[in-house]
Length: 163
Image (tube, rainbow, N blue to C red; front, side):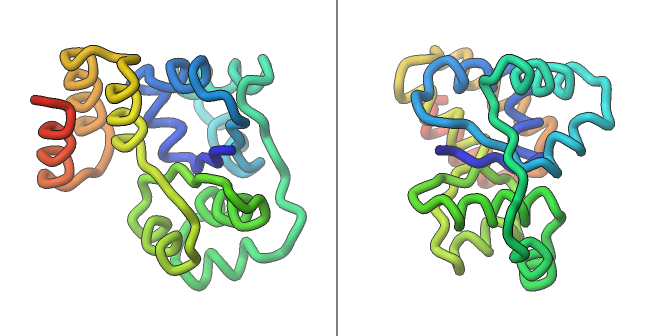
């Protein structure tokens, strides 16, 4: 299972990698209730795409049933979407958390939650030959435009994609 926070699922939808992942990943793709609530505020392409994939049952929405979300928010200075995603990942051992939030990534390292990022998903898609080198580099360019990545992260990803 992959659990997504808001920023990562939105970034993947914006650069049109979300469907590629949904069509090629065999396990569950889950977002917390707070993420869909955040997405529902907007009527942008990415928000509409995410909502449609939820309606189609390709993305599962789960409500948090424990009370560790507030503690995670306070301990790691993350928003509710990241905190609920981490809580879901902790509750479902073996889950992978997809986040691009620096504080959430640091929390994952401390809490031993396996994680990936939008760029990591892009690199993996290229590695599985789901994208050509040119397509992957174009998607990376879009991610660098929409995401808040340091130049060295983009440069490293570019070299991993063969660019």
